[in-house]
Amino acid sequence: MEPLLKGPAALDYLMKAFTNCYGSPSEVCSSLPMTMRWLSSVSNCKDEEWGEHQNSVSNLKANDSSSQELLMSITLKTGGSYNSKNSTQIPFVNPNSSNVTGQEQPECKGDKVDVLVRLGLLKLVSGVSGLTPDALPETFMLNFSRLRGVQAEIQKIIVISTSILIFRQILSSEQASDMERTISNCTEQLSEFLNCVEDAGIEGIVDTIIGTSRHGDKVTDDKNLQLRKSMMARMLAKSLQAEDPVFKKVSRAVYLAFRGIVFGGSGTHGRKLAETALRQVGAASLTERVVKEAKVLVVAATVSIGVHGPWYATLI
Image (cartoon, rainbow, N blue to C red):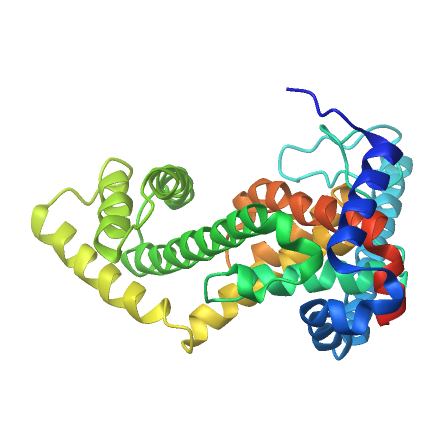
């Protein structure tokens, strides 16, 4: 069903409705206590996080430029395109091109309100505890289900990444054959399993991974499979604890991947930032899943700024 109002008319309608509920921007300090507290908590770290993002983008552009220069040098030396069977050509993608499929979400240009709202939303959905309406800023009360959905996806991505990281370690210790194909199959099957089972436990996760891997490597002996399953369950139970170093490392990588899209947009640079972060924990194959969910945050932030901009401006 098409919405009755679109564009500026929709924003104007939402702004009037918000004013009727919470009053004018001049009353913001008394009418929006949760929003004020939320923005205040984010303001303490926004400069550091935005600076880290800018540094990452600068490094990414420098690497892209170096890759392009390398390819041009190779082409000049060989008198044509470089097509060695023993080498991998590094493609250079123009970050200004618009060939990324689907509707791209814009990057943040550094506007103070934009940085605060985007980062604030990311912080909200990155918490370990489930998001509740009581914890939401008044400006996002209508977005609770969407934000809770993104948080659930983040937690699934962390579980998948942690599980695959541990399983990769087990396969490496066994010197398993065709490890990358096995890992790829397990990632796909585990993703499907977590999408279908709402309250998946350690046993279900391990059974899914081990069951998939049984057909992907040479370990078919029941005794060896049981040993692998026991080791996997023990390591996974430990690594999914909030204070465990593995959990912290994976959670940080997933957070940085989301931040890459939330700040960098869903174009080339944002996607590369997300992929780079996930690659640190062997989860680059989940990049598109991160992009899909992070775009929800960018849209929510953009719409909110369009509707609640005067209230935000008063608070900061």
